[in-house]
Image 1: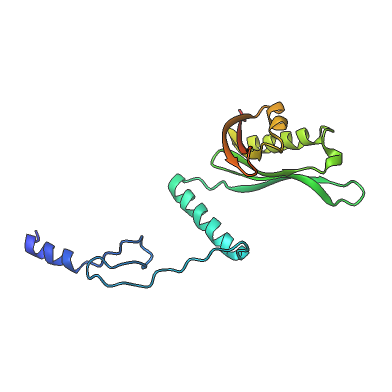
Image 2 (image 1 turned 60 degrees about the vertical axis):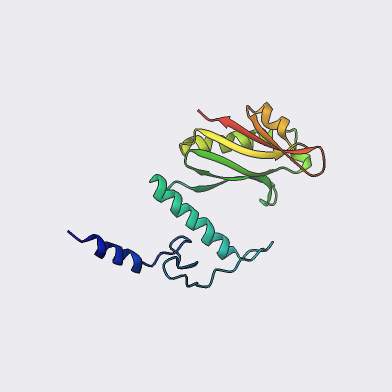
Length: 175
């Protein structure tokens, strides 16, 4: 068994960093410093940088949950003559949730039932992937009524600009 004096000596020699395990930050034991990482704000991040952040978060989630099920999802609406995409829905599935990120149809297709079918197909794919719930946000001047007519419910609103406008957060049980 080690003596108390030996344990104290070992503790005093320990190199403890107070910012994660990245090697950045202040050395608490000897008060020396290491260069901190630089921060950069941009509206045009490099796709590789975005992928690095996304992949690192996904790895964290996998380690925390033991589940590796994140997948992209898209329901594309194509012009029958050109086969070009003219609208659709994009999102992802992960950890039992379907996230609808973007949904757009050109004005000439709205009100035709195609939007409801796109949403139904995304929800069905979410169910096939084991999702029990779907979530999205829309803006008060966009399509909250459309989603409500398709069985979605509001669970929160956050004011945004222009004044009187809100981000409308919605969910739907997929079971």
